[in-house]
Amino acid sequence: MKRSEINSIIKEMEALLRAHSVYLPPFCSWTPEEWKTKNHEYDEIRDNMLGWDITDFGLGNFDRTGFALITLRNGNQHNPKYKKVYAEKFIMLRDGQTAPMHYHWTKSEDIINRGGGTLRISVRNGLKDRTIDDSDVLVNSDGRSYYVKSGSGILLNPGESITLWPYQYHDFSIVKGTGSVLIGEVSQCNDDTTDNCFHEKVGRFPEIENDEAPYRLLCNEYPAAV
Image 1 (spheres, rainbow, N blue to C red):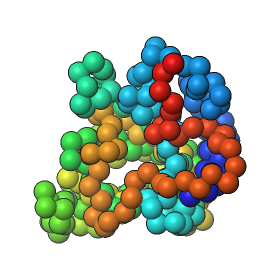
Image 2 (image 1 turned 120 degrees about the vertical axis):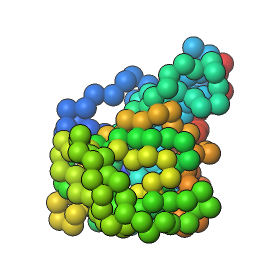
Image 3 (image 1 turned 90 degrees about the horizontal axis):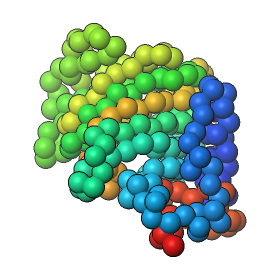
Image 4 (image 1 turned 90 degrees about the vertical axis):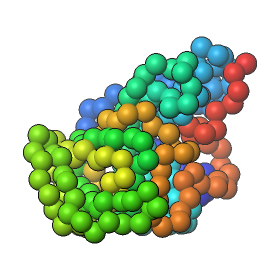
């Protein structure tokens, strides 16, 4: 991805967050120059990959397949130094955009439509060998438990949510014409380097062409502490 595209997407998501009266912690607006002055008191941000995360999943077409995310809080599955056992994110999904089918080996999560259009989450049962089990899928949504056919799309209007369990394949899309969605995620500790299982081979963090200076650093770009 070009840095200019990433900068534009971050500004677009900042505007979407403001439109829904979401206020971010200070570190989300630090410039690259400000990051150079941050010492070890901010290691929690570095170690747990808090902050901005823009990806086209290595497919080269963000408008079609991509995610813009910001992680506000997170623990660490691999470092006992960090005691948090939960994470929180916001995600922007554009009308007409999708995110690839995947499950998590460890993490369970609630996906919440925080505002905008109608979000569609398609669900399937996954197996440890990454294949799909075509049996009916248990859906847990806002206090209701029921079964749907494999591949069914669960529609979430603003305020509605779904709980996704380990080995439960899911993908994201928008009901066409309803508008971009601000998604909330509340989950167990998040680890995007080891806990994602994509059904099709895709990437996770993009290769970046620096055609302009970064507006915000991504969560995997922070400089070491001074």
